[in-house]
Image (cartoon, helix red, strand yellow):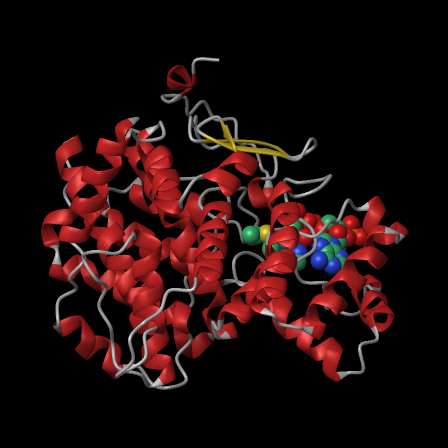
Length: 401
Ligand code: ACO
């Protein structure tokens, strides 16, 4: 089908599809996924190969520009990002104003939106050069906002990265470097973080990505569109699931480790409880990212010498679900976030920060999708509805109501 030929069509026929379960919103050449076969590829590269062999910045480049970079392209990209990684000092005042109780996702979405005020030229992007400038700016500044958000929550001084370190190494330095201490990079943690960020980097038209595209379709600007995407990701049915999974596993542990009790709760239709980290709108066989993450969780915990009883509870729950007709019939399998929190915890990242880490990984995907939408000159997103309210009625003055 020539999708562009459909663009002018407002022919009076409206399809209604709550949750857009069967509605395609765009053409896209970024991410291919086959939910029945459990296939995920970014720009044609299988996720398994990228997770095994690539680093996060290479993957970000491929998502945004279409191909894996040459050495020279990657070096230039990284240098451009580094040159834009300073965040205005006044952003610290905004950060300071947040109460201690603020959720890191709320802080991150506000700060990302606030960046527009400090970089007004990033809003009107009429050429690919303008786009490139806005893209390297946000790739430089976003990890700083992420690290500062965590440090603020922990009451620690705010760090900057170093010109000599790689992209992911700098993220770690900014997050973990302690005052008056030489920072020593833990390569096991670095490799695991690279892998987690790659696995989260894009997932075609999910809730947050569709949000980024639809907000961007009004030409609102990249940072504002990303801020909206962060808010969409926050919810427990989407990115917020990684925090919810760990809290659920903790609750099961505290409750004596009785996984059967929680399985029964999840199946009880009068109980709103769901097994967090299970089920996916598109994967109806298995989530290829979950396979990779489960293996990584084992490796990271072993390598770091961490013995986490939560991992055993997670494995037990997975085993029971895979043999339970309720979960089998509904094709509910562990998703990407079932095991990611266990790794983040072993790295020393607070539970409240898990969804922020997801946002950090998803950033290049959101950027790539926004760029594609603008370059394809997509029309403003504006779904229709079936009206079910009152038909016409007359105004009644307030004293007569
Ligand atoms: N636990 C128990 N039952 C579930 C679960 C679950 N985790 N997920 C779905 N179901 C059941 C539903 O109750 C429904 O049952 P019914 O047909 O008897 O009414 C059936 O499975 C289908 O569920 P829907 O909600 O219609 O499926 P949908 O595709 O709309 O939702 C979603 C997908 C949101 C991921 C859902 O499976 C869920 O809430 N999972 C838990 C939260 C989670 O892990 N989210 C992360 C998703 S991955 C990501 O965003 C990165």
